[in-house]
Image (cartoon, rainbow over all chains, first blue to last red; front, side, top):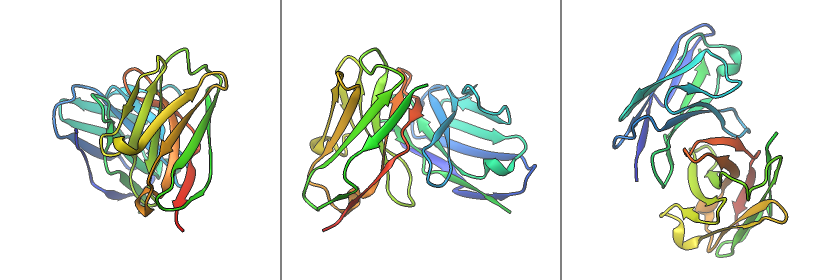
Length: 107
Length: 118
């Protein structure tokens, strides 16, 4: 199985801050990576696929980069609705696996 | 607009079988995509359980494979999960979701909490 490791596990930030979350795969997955946002009591929402492609309807504040084993999700200017937990997911092979999550909290 | 809705018992006894159904609207599950199940224990992360390809093949998480069955009823446009011999460790919110051939989950159900307890 491909293990996905996210860091940090939590981050405190203010509205307007730039936030970067990293995700590392235990083996190379090319660009086959997705990022999801999850708010309390809600299902995850697809933000980014193929490492850097923005899902339709998602704010351009979100961007993704990376390939191989190292990936990043950046929120350029944090908005109140962006406080949530973010997960990466490798889309290279079954079994599909997720990172442990990064909680973005209000400072 | 594609919509998915999970249904099933919210409480299952230990050693019994958890059974959930996902009703899909806005797209025929027989026409394309994969249809999967993901779970999330309270306060924890996401775990992929398994997926059903529109052509009928199934793919299961090896960690659960011996206990899982995913099937479909195309006439009702729904697919189902059965997880046998449950324990408290199977307590989680269970989501059904659609994923692309590139394995990205683009539509999700709202999730249903299943508690395993006597």
